[in-house]
Image (cartoon, rainbow, N blue to C red; front, side):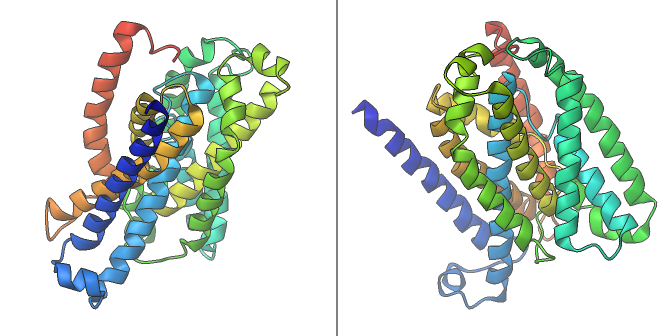
Length: 329
């Protein structure tokens, strides 16, 4: 019976995903009857469908980004949202939109990916990535380096937004993690995320060897530096494309992988598979909560995640620190 457990777990998680999707379509600032949802004869349904699509895709991307970054660095607290990677993407996206007003959605996404890559590179170097290859030094320095990058990039992004009235109207909610209610060029980032999620599956085995140690990975024919480069590239693309759609959301990439790894055990590919429906469900549920709590107003999904994510982080720390797992998992 033991081999069937992953099947049952996948069925459970995808059922949770389906429930979150139904809630995302059914509930919001305006009422929609169950009959209208079933027959699709309400104008709200198409808008909520697009919003749910953005939430599920970005939720899966951020969860997978967190899982891969945590596995690479050996730090269970690594999250693109709180290590500065998403903040770097946000800064570049805002700067591109402000200084190149004619920039297309694809150009903004490319700039966001570039910003995520630069922030990720700075994070890796400041945390001593090269010197810490195969050691635990990077796991210790990563949170401090991430906090510095995040504070710098977010403050600069907010300065750019607040100095321009047009940017305020477009990006003030976006930087708080707002799910877009209508399409404004999100097709390219959505397709990019889906492609990156598919490619990431093939990186799991290679990264799993890396977690055994750089020497062990090299002895089995997998160059650890190539693994590092591929993993950081995947995290960069997923984070940058996600930020281009919903802004710099934090905590989802920390908490969802923590749960997925607890359910999957040491099997990285299995945890990857768990992160996709679980991350999608969490972001959709956060968006629904933000729409119904202060109806007819809205609270951005990123703020909902920040509120509950802070509490979740405290719970994670209480579990990790007594066991000494806050350094290396």
